[in-house]
Amino acid sequence: MPAGSRLSCVVNIIFIETIFKPILGFTIKTKAGQVVYGCNTEITESKAAQNFQAMGAASRALQIKIDFEMNLSASDYFISLGVASQKENGPEPHDRRFDSIHMVVEPPTFLALLI
Image (cartoon, rainbow, N blue to C red):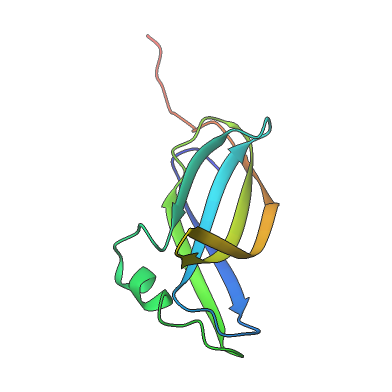
C-alpha cells in the first residue's frame, strides 16, 4: 500500500460475556516495536465510537470498520488490536492481539519532469 493512501480495517468482535462500556483500541508499530500511531473508542469522538461503548452484551457480534490515512514512511508495520473496559483503577484488557496484522507501506509514487 502506498504511503498517504487510506486504509480500512474491518474487525469482527463477539462478546462471550457482557462487558460494560467496552473499548476497542489499535496501535501501529514499527518492526522495532516502536508505537507510531494509536487510537481507541474511548478517546475518539465519532458517533460509531460512542455507539461501540453501548454494545458489550453477551453473545453480541459486531463488525467495526476502522479508517485512517497511511501517513507513514515506507517500511514494514504491525497492527495490534484489543478490547478492554474502564475500571476504577484503569483499563482492564479482555482480549489483545499483538502484531496480528503485517502491513507494508511503499514509497509514494511521484511523476516528475527533469529539465
